[in-house]
Image 1 (cartoon, helix red, strand yellow):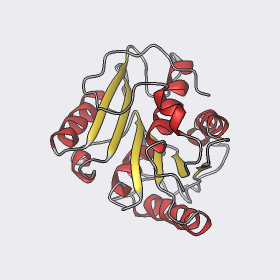
Image 2 (cartoon, one colour):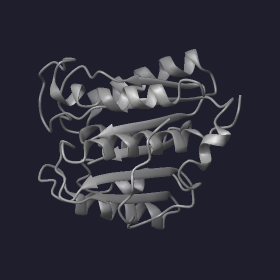
Image 3 (cartoon, helix red, strand yellow):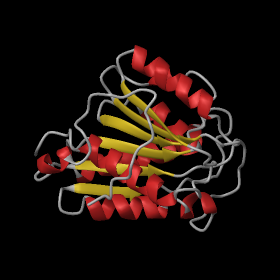
Image 4 (tube, helix red, strand yellow):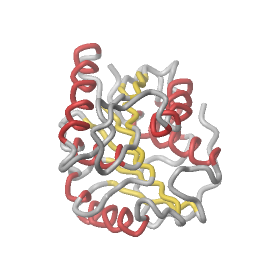
Length: 224
């Protein structure tokens, strides 16, 4: 089970069940959670499992997998072919679509939750329109503009962003969450005071928050 941290005030708060209440509904559900690492704005270098962008997401992957092990949750961390977004993100988006297709074959009908850090948050936003994507959990997402319009009405979106981030803009992600919320997305934006992009400040809080949000969204999947 996730350890639920004390939360900072949300700028926007959706109407999902309060922390821990969803746990009573989890038995018998099924969902796939895909964890999307960050990357670089431009790079054709081959992505490797030992790159820090991948390494830093493994504790998140493990935490979600352990917490959801008895609840039908399947967790996969995606490995991109190359490290960069590169003019529209077609390579990274294609990589994730391939993993999504595998998940659909292995678990027909199971909804998908996307968890993305930095560039991974941007990839997740661009895949949010897929009909079986139940929601997105974004950590310090790289959202330069317009991402809030990629989410469907009534979809679930939870964003956590350090206020001292100098790599991606917390103000930009907050604006996109507000834009999404105005369109009917069930969205929340939560700050981590004085935390930077690489989630080194208050790491336990980052991990517990992501685990909680991913399982909370997954708990909305219908029982199989």
